[in-house]
Image 1 (cartoon, rainbow, N blue to C red):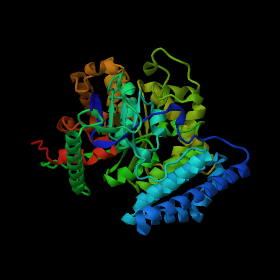
Image 2: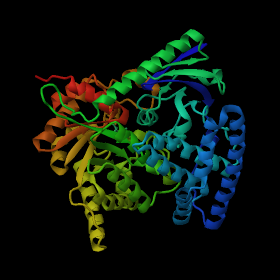
Image 3: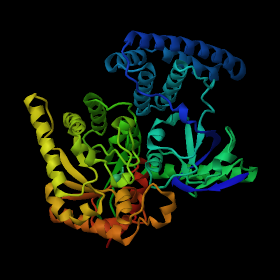
Image 4: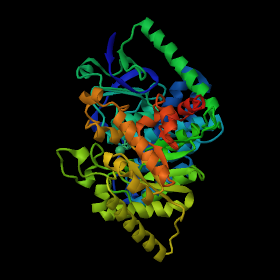
Length: 543
Ligand code: PEP
Ligand code: MG
């Protein structure tokens, strides 16, 4: 038994087999194709192959585990022949001119999400099956060896570090937890782990990877940051108990669904959720968030191998808005750059990327990219209650430029008779000290502020959020940060505007009372933290 210690970034306990992350095995990339028929033929061949495999597995299961248990593979064979499923794959290849792997993966995501949102628990369980058969087809398309059943294919991914683009590409269905040798708690990889409800420990030390082998039993404690390799019997039992208690506690929180976010003395606050993709919507609904306070739209760009088209973006935004059925959805425009690098942007290497060419700075100098996104957002706005938020603001002139571009896009849409809502709220991130300090000048120009405490902390304390050595210096409770938030809140309210917090600090329940006392109107947190923050709010008395 070996024990490693890092930083837990999502509180949960995982027990399972280790799997060393192999960089060249990132699944499913979106590739543009020209020969649609050839791509459809590839799907047919991979499906045929999958069907043969499933027949073999069914026969084996029938002998070894009996008919009832083997039936699942019959269901898989039926799903493989399902018309809706197959039509969706074909239509994605034909309309988007993309590779078969991508079309199968996208169909899998859509169907799995549809199943998981159904009321019936039997139908919910079909989400896993649709993913399983899709993975089988994708594996056969790329000739990879597949496990014969999915019962034991959930792994604890062990890596030196994971870039945000790698994290979003991980197959969530085979991911039990992840452990990285390096990495910092404020990185986007850590944020993604929280958004995806994945127990994760980062920064366990450089010698970790030399000690781990594939398939070794491992315990990951996302609360304490402990990672135990090959635990002895006593340790394993201890963690099994901890895991069961944790699950029971989380179940208890579900009783708060449908309840108000209100303190004992009657002060109300909105609790929204942060998402990075439409695949997080299920978790938002499950945890009863009253809206989406931050949709990090850049992950759409990170998942793509080329600029996402206006239509592709439109469909994503429409889906979120429709799913939230009139609840507020705040979509943040592209915040690419710094640690969120996308190859096809061809951004030059910079010495200080966090202080460099990123976010709104890219949008204002590349209006082609910015206008495509704004058009998609405006078109989607008629499907729900949209707010658009701009990242990395430092000045009044940036807002003036943004508004001018927005007006141009609106005029273009109008002249083409394309509808957009006239009730869209426009907001900015307060994530630079400059924005907080001139918040009295910015408030009259916008409808709301949302404080990005992750960047506000790094810029105020001059602490690179990506650098694990600085973690002890990166005091998110520093008085300077809290004063800047209070200052921005007072200025927002002076002009009748609302203010939220969407950085990770919003989920820090030791500060919830302070935020309420500052008059913060909304806290936006990872979906799995919504009910925990609600619980905290309901136990606070401000009188
Ligand atoms: C922040 O900086 O607090 C924030 C919410 O944005 P991101 O973490 O995506 O930079
Ligand atoms: Mg930020």
